[in-house]
Image 1: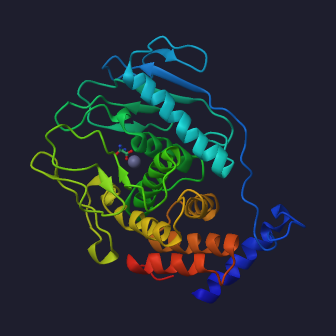
Image 2: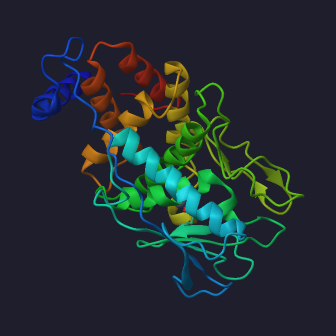
Amino acid sequence: MAADLMARATEVREERAEFAVKGVPGTQGVVARAAPIAAAPIREVYDGEKKAALPGRGPVRTETTNNEPNDQEVTDAFEGAGDVFDLYSKEYGRNSLDDAGMTLISTVHHRRNYNNAFWNGTQMAYGDGDGQIFTPLSGSLSVIGHELSHGVVQFSGGLIYRDQSGALNESFADVFGVLTVQRKLGQTACEADWLVGDGILGPNIKGDALRSMKAPGLAYDDPLLGKDPQPYHMDLFVVTTSDNGGVHINSGIPNHAFYLFAQYLGGHAWEKAGHIWYDALQNLNNPHATFQDWAIQTMIEAANIHGSGTLEVAYLRRAWKLVGISV
Ligand code: ASN
Ligand code: ZN
């Protein structure tokens, strides 16, 4: 496995050699990261008016108009989309979800008492929650980053939304959801809370968030919401037919691997760790990928960026090992 991996890493390195920065001391053998781009987002927010039709009334907010300045959900969806755009453009050189500058369309006040948010393949939609289980879902930047990152997955070759590939799709969305928050707040891996969907649980719900990458399985435990079902290790992998084969459940495993890797590295998780995960998605070329396939791809990217004998590669191998995946 290790030999295969390193052979593939060499191949990838050669394929990309033309992009390497040449003649700059210290950059030999290091593939240049995608240069940050100066592009600006094009955002539109619509008011769903508690109905199911999309996109709804509007746009009520664009880059040049703001008809609903006192609507918190409109403001959150607009600004949050900008934070996600900035993460991808400034850190990974990606111009919007499709890397071709597509308009970021969001609908807030989607349906009545709707306890969810989603990317529908074209746009975002956020419910206001029922006030018991959830408050408006646009109130959490990690949720906004999560949902828009489903768009990035879609335009990067996709990960079929069931079983392990679906859990990888979910995990990628969680990773870049929390990275949006961490980058906005300037937090190190150590300072961050690693929560997805914090601040949107109803006032009486016993829990911190929807999911915890730091402690999968411990995000909430509540009579109304049940107990967080996420595993943090392959030994606890949940075999189920619900939730598309547990896509929001088993995502705890790759989520925790990312968390552990980022902790080993220290510093800003969106830099080294985020780059490796982003590159892995770009180069995976396998919509049916398993956790093992994904782990190998991240190892390829780590070796490609940092070199095969580096601490970064060793840390990553260790992180995967700790969640029960050998690479
Ligand atoms: N909020 C959920 C998600 O983005 C919606 C869904 O299950 N599709 O995963
Ligand atoms: Zn999701």
